[in-house]
Image (cartoon, rainbow, N blue to C red; front, side):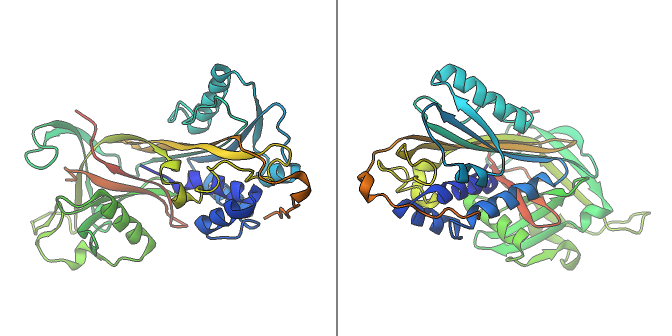
Length: 367
C-alpha cells in the first residue's frame, strides 16, 4: 500500500530549502514552484486533519551543531522540533514513539535508521472510519484462483443502499468491478476487482481513474442480468420488499508495506539530492546536506466494523560536501510559499475526492 499524502509534504519542504539542480528536480516532481510548495503542503495536511477520524503531522529533528535556517523552519507550520542525541538507540526510541503516537499505534516504528543523521524530517498520516452498515463475519474457502484451498475471514453485507454503490467500468486493465463501502464520517473505501491475472498496478490505476472521474462507470441498475464484471453477477428474484438489493462478500485484510523512495529516486525528484554535494543551503547554510535515506512504512486493516490505516514517511539528511567555496555562495530567496482474489482499495475523502490511502490486497486475513 502507499500514500502520496505522506511523501508530497516532505518533498515540498525539501524543495523550499534546496538550491541548484536539486531544487529544479524537486520542482519537476512536485509540479509546483518551490516557493509555493510549503504553503500547498500546509494546506494539504490541514485538509487531512479536518477530516473526522484522520490525523496528519510533520516532525523535525536535528543534531547538535546543525544550524537550521529560521525561515525554513517557519515554513513547516510549527511542527514538533526535537533534537537528535547522536545515540542511535535513544534517537530510535524517540522517533518510534512519535510514529506510534501520531498513527495511534498503527505504525509502531519510524521507517528510517537515525544513525549518522544530521536531520530527520518525517510525516505521519492516519485514517479511520466506521462502516455505515457493519459487515457480518464468517469464513469461506476459495475453490479457485490465487487463494484456492485456503480458509479466510469472510465479511458479508447486503442492503438496498449497496445496490447503488456497485458499478463496472472499462479500463486499460480490462473490465473492473467497483464497490463503494460507505463510512459513517467523510471517508469511504472503494474496492476494485480486476479480471483474473490483471496486474496490480493496472487495477490500482483503474481505481484512481474511477474516483477521479476519468473512467466512466456503469451502475448495476443499467446492466442486464448475468455475469457483468469480475466477481459480479446480476439476477432477478422475487422479494416481498420493492427495493433492489446489493450484496458484497469480501475478505477481511491487513496489509503492511515499506517503500524505499531512493530506489526510484528520480520519480520523487531526489536523484540529485541523494548525491554528494551541498544541495540544501536554504535549510542550513553552515552544514552541507544531502538526502541519505527516504522511506515510507504503511499499514491498513479492513474489518467488519471499519477501516483504519496509517503511514509514516521520513527523510534522513546526512553530511554532504561543500561544492562551492565561501566566496562563491549565493543567497537564495525562500518565500512563504465476493472479492476472492487479489484486489485494490482506495480510501477516499468523500467531499473533496482526495485519496487518503491506496493499496493492493495480495493476501487476506485468515479465518
